[in-house]
Structure formats: C-alpha cells, structure tokens
Amino acid sequence: MIELPKHKKLILFDGVCNLCNSSVQYVIKHDKKNVFMFAALQSEFGKQFIKDHHIDTKKTDSILLYTSEDGISYKSTAALKIAYYLGFPNSLMSAFLIVPAFIRNWVYDYIAKNRYKWFGKKEQCMIPTPDLKSKFLN
Image (tube, rainbow, N blue to C red; front, side, top):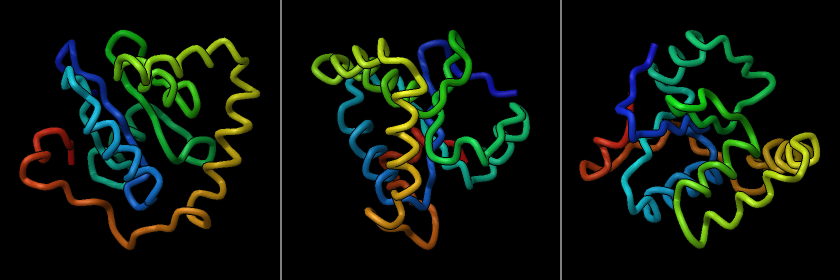
C-alpha cells in the first residue's frame, strides 16, 4: 500500500488523454503549496494502485484523488476536491460538492466518455520534464 507524506495528495489520471494531461499541467501550474503528486493510471505504479485498492476501471477510468485523510475520491468529487486544494479562486468550484453526486457524475461521465473524440488521445503516457519528474510516481 502507498504511504504518501502527510501533506501530499496523489492524482491518478488517464495518461494518454489530452484533456487529462492538460488538466494535470493546469494543476501543476496552480499548485502553489506543492501538495500534489501524480501517476498515470497506465503506469506500473498506477496499475499496482488499482490492484491494491480493488478499483473497477470499467466504472472510473479518467481521474482519482487519493489523500491519507480521505482515501480515494472518484470522478467529479475528485475533480472538485482538487480544485479546493488549489486554493482561491479555483477553490470556489468546490461549492458544486453540494450538488448530488449522481448529477455531477452524469455530467462528468458524459465528458469522460467523449474525451478522446473531443480532445484527442496520445499513443503513450506523458513523460514529465526533468524539473517535474519528482512530482510523478512511475
């Protein structure tokens, strides 16, 4: 099982999805407190994490957030919690957590289902630059 430092949060993402990669780049740019670490779901680490936590990839295949305090968050809940941890003004998005998850996830699932068609797909996972390598788990 993974042991993250107390102040770190782990984002697992679809490493071949252009939308997901752009979102990761956005989080990196706005992560002023340096709280996030990243791993592609397709990486060895990501595969082991999925196995260790018995995650059904047919139900969620685009983003997960893991924190030592809250465990695993999925789909829209993960995205909104990430926004919260980024601080103001991104944290304002977390107000949408009051919307029932089944409604939020319907919108999330619609975008996730069409993400390759709308935003494209890479042949392989993003390779972080040397500067960012310490933020990624392989």
